[in-house]
Image (cartoon, one colour):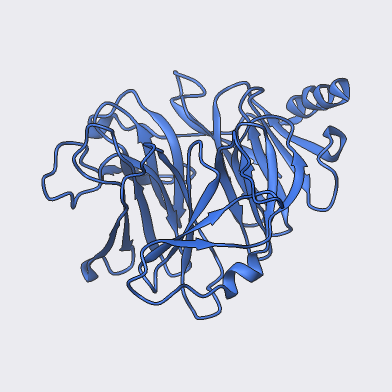
Length: 330
């Protein structure tokens, strides 16, 4: 099995053209940084990065020709009002062009974690802020993914994950409240140790991956879209729904992504590979197709139109070119 998997990698890599795209942020005073996540809106790219003093930058999508621009959106300094964007963990863009920004807790920061929502089309309309209580065990917020389909009541909802936790948070924009999707076995016991840190959703499916044991779970997305949030004023919501154990992935996953045909793509950071799996098949290696094996720190897969896709590297693929994105065929 292992031989077939890695032989396929070598064959495919020989066929892949070395297209690459770059972000150079030296013009805004950011030289050394690592890309955590990218959200795209047409030609605009919102980069969540790790650097000495900046965590969110807006830049142009590097595939575009012409002038490449960038400006800083975060202010990772002390902020007594806690209104600014600090210690950004990830972003998402919903179906009506609103930017969702998940801000974490730096530990020594006086500001609690929060969610900030801004319109990209009408920036003068103000923003929505929701502050989260700090978790009792110091859990760190990790990712945010907005459901592309509205709930049955027209609500827009987002899934938020934390590191080393056995639950996923579901945020309701209409109710301005948050619920906890708790994972349990049929005997009501928990699934420790577990870290439900990776989530992917499209029109038809919702997957959550455990980055400790590589387990993949499927949740009934249609039922969750019908699920009504309690009345206003209820702060602690535990939501129960069926969870299906799908199997174990090929390794510790990152960047879970669902395409329009329900294929699941994910990054095997151990191997620097992007693999693709079709829903309904077992999760054995022979049911995966290797899309890319770059050998660098791939963090994310971005899907475009007409089969276009890019793998995003956390660090530069090449210091000379300062590129972060590699075009792939999925």
